Amino acid sequence: MGIIRNLSAYLTRIRPNLFRNHHKLIMARRLHASRTVGVDKNVWVEFTQLAADYKAVNLGQGFPDFSPPQFVQDAFCKAVSGGPQMHQYTRAFGHPRLVKSLAKFFSRIVGREIDPLEDILVTVGAYQALFCAFQALIDVGDEVIIVEPFFDCYQPMVLMAGGTAVYVPLRPKEGSTVLSSGDWVLSAEELASKITPRTKAIVINTPNNPLGKVYKVEELQMIADLCIKHDLLCFSDEVYEWLTYDGAKHVKIASLPGMWERTITVGSAGKTFSATGWKVGWAISSGHLIKHMKIIHQNSVYHCATAAQEAVSHGFDREYELFGTPESYFQQLPAMLHQKRQKLASCLRSAGLQPIMPEGGYFMITDISSVKVDLNDENTENETYDFRFVKWLIKEKGLATIPVSAFFSPEHRKEFDKYIRFCFVKENSTLEAAEEILRKWSQKE
Ligand code: PMP
Ligand code: GLN
Image (cartoon, rainbow, N blue to C red):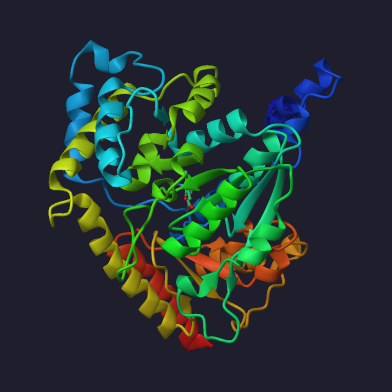
């Protein structure tokens, strides 16, 4: 009996290794394609798992921990029970009802007639709209200028397309106390100096993740002038377009003269209707650009879930009717988030941390250079300061945030490794749990 028990315990121990190493037994050749090299690390994969492992209060990954508004939930339920068609393939480039709703809604915003069939591509979240843009429009050897801090997927997407990423950081204004994301500015000279004959596109994100900067029209005009002068494309990631505070106004660079023809505007129903798991996004642009993106889309995912598209379409139709009124979700969501933003800011201040107030989006960053902690975890020794700090915060204090250097290029990472990002699109109870952790911690110091 003892021998059998020992043998079975031994097998249980070695089984995972047998499976893990199985490929080594059957294949000797290199398995991975070159495009997977150098893009293996992913901050969401790493920190979302760590937050779950330590059951931390999660102000890390950006998703609401509350439900989407009732009207889109109802629309989704109605779609799901709306007959066989709702469960089958729909048009590859966007469910007909949704592209019509998007075209109607955004024609009014951009101030031009958007063609539902030519100028819109519905994608699996904003991620896939970005992926299609890079794959369809960036070639081997092309340079792509990315303004930092940037949403982290732009860099691997440029690399996977065979392009070269070139970085220009937004920097805190010199000499002044930096209290707002608006105090981080882009130098026109520095941006212009990065343009070469190989430059194909400039990537911007407004409102910016993680900083919360909402580009002013003059800043967008400066970028637009360079795009026009050097015949460049602009990829404008505007997933947080409805989330602005304290009078900041979101402007679409595509609406500036001469920019429609060269701008891909990316949006997300996940952010728009607080339903990140639905993974419905879109790219809007002139048909002569969208047609190339359609090729990548039709040969990769083909289309995204029909019922989710139907529900998003109902959401936009409702918003079209209520636009600018207090009943509009595009008014209600920022109003609710404004409160949460204030709550998080005062909680950080009371813990001795100075928040950089975001003008938009649902993230807030803070400088941690004055916080004294003993980061003695040997496992994280070779990592940047903010990565080590956030890991310590999760493991020792049970609070998850995101290290801001993940949004910078390797060459600028060191300059910006003393900030962490908090997400405030959370229930008040979650924000209060975070507050409690910070309060206890600051009292002990
Ligand atoms: N762009 C930015 C700036 C983001 O923060 C995110 C994360 N949601 C995305 C794109 C991807 O959006 P989606 O979830 O719709 O794919
Ligand atoms: N956009 C989200 C954020 O910034 C997360 C995206 C993801 O988890 N891949 O937190």
